[in-house]
Length: 385
Image (tube, rainbow, N blue to C red):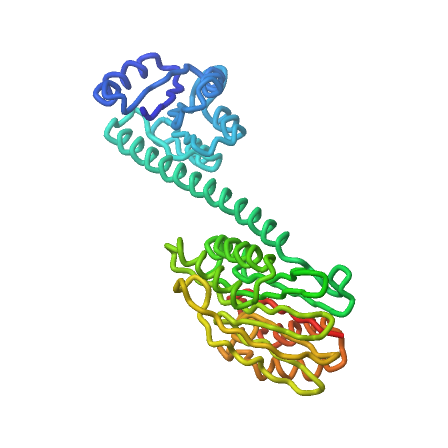
């Protein structure tokens, strides 16, 4: 595509000079020249040809001079248009006024065409740079909009519960999630399996951003689909793992803890796929739930997953979290750690799960101080009454 230049000059022989000096580039369609004899006519040509990238404008012209023309061009807000002023040699006052008014460059008259060639080349390079920048901005804007849309989708998938879930008054639940970016890889959910069983899972996808969010959506869907078939936790993780392992070119994985609570008896069965073991707070005693020694989802297919069972007592609480809590660092690169998590849980004795979650997050934020949040922070706990 030819680089289009508008010449605005009342000297009629300028058209012929440009045509002769740049005839090869014109023949090869590298350059194209349009012409106007004054600033007013030049503005009309610019309006008719938005593809023009460069203007050669003389300062001294009838009807509308070059400086007035330059001021009017600036009102057009055309980023990909540069004006080069032509001025009599030594007319520094007008040249300074032109440069201060937004002229890209200037050339003295009579024109040194070698200088003009260099100026055209410099202008072309600048326009090319600005076009690339514009494309980058458009891509970034598109990505940002996509990220915001993904964040809204992700947020809609994760239930915000601080209280009871549906008619299950025996269980008090608290959920909290703060992504490190617009979208994250952490997710959780509460599922009604039947009229007396609730399923709870919390998970963390490797990586951050859009890729993690996409794998998070796949993982969340897989676990939820199999969980709603009333399968045992270990069987749900086995089937979800097989599904995620089949098409995982990015080699991502999801750590997950999934448990099913019998709300009438307090029986809690669970399976852990490489996730942080939750804590059980029972009658002033805080213990870590025994691991089932299984791998994360998406790593290796056809893997068996273990199953554990505990009996909750009235008032017992299960506290689940992702490593964005335990591995959060302060400005000294010191980790928050599980000992601090345990201290907050003990100090929150007798408080409802929502207050416990708030206390844990506040303690984490105070510890982190001005250090940047590098990982999603998710806290998910429930109490059986």
